[in-house]
Length: 253
Image (tube, rainbow, N blue to C red; front, top):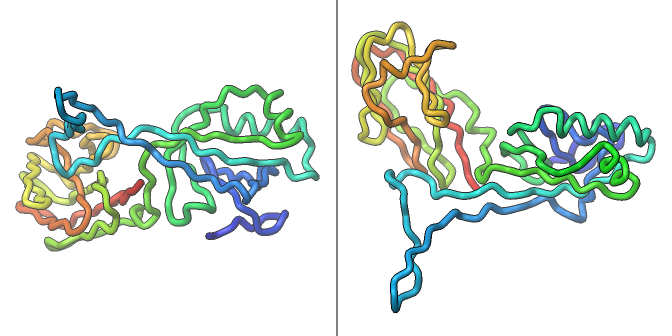
């Protein structure tokens, strides 16, 4: 486990929206590890005389199961040299100025990040009061965490196998450089495009095709988006293609 090196020495910490907790004067109580776990959203089918069955509503077997958000708690205290009033205002602004999903990393899950927000009901006064003893910061996290390795761009100039090292399906960003009519092939599935001029970008997570800031969904001849299942993924294409760039976004629970 990598610990954060600060003016206070080597400590456990978390980084939220680009700012580290240690730089806010917050120290995590390492005796209370900050872990949590999502629960699957399941639908039970009641059948008389039999135990309930779990219904699988996925239309694509390569889709991940549905999991709900979960809370991750950091038990913190204020480094003694900090001014309480100043620190409380700074921490409150950091957590609540923009209540939206942001990138969350910590020293407990090295090599991964989560998408999270702080949804607690706290005032500046509550933060200040907590800092006098202990402040529990609760982050509401999306179920899946993302591998830092999955942010690296893979460049393909010929059809190739891409290995997903995680056990869950990834929703990649793909940029196809080429022109005219193009068919991208992923695991035997065809994703067709028309009238490509230079390149097209496909984001399977937000289900959009675009070129820079211009939408290109009208150039997709399928309503589905490519996914990279766990294990091997054979990727190829037909048409005038120079190269394909993929940011795979490997994910796991």
